Image (cartoon, rainbow over all chains, first blue to last red; front, side, top):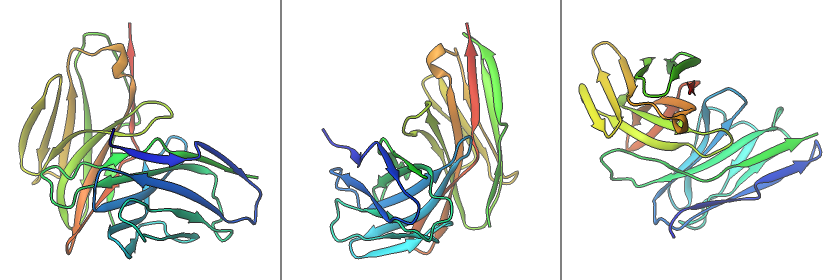
Length: 114
Length: 112
């Protein structure tokens, strides 16, 4: 089955530690995205990538980093510079040429930093 | 920057019709999308409007007026499983890039 996988589902870290969230897709989509969602809020774009080895900052990139070495994979690192890292992180992908620009989302990773 | 406004909560009974409005202010507007998200789950795509008018998909319809910077999602014959959060999202064009900016969401509660 095609889809997007994110792991782990729940992640706990101590303050001051970097942590990397995994996102893999087998939909053959060119574009991939990372969003952050806080309770009762919408999704805010962190980074996106339209092609391998290239990515752009979204609205809230500070304290985060990404890489896109393979089309299928777009890991997100939450660094110790991110002031409020506890949130629900969602990865998505989409085709570049599409009539609806539909984004397909993974199940998310809930990160708690204490 | 971009801003979107949608009601935070809506309540309706099973079988009823509900309309969730969305107004937006943005530059580089390309289209308006709607996503559904159940508690703790992944958002799923419902509809996309690039042109003015109504798009119908089963029990759900979506409307866009570009001149009014306004759209809505219409849900008919409500079912309990429709209880979820609904997000409008504007698709922004920046060169060849397309990115979504989401509203804060409308929590729909369907009562028996």
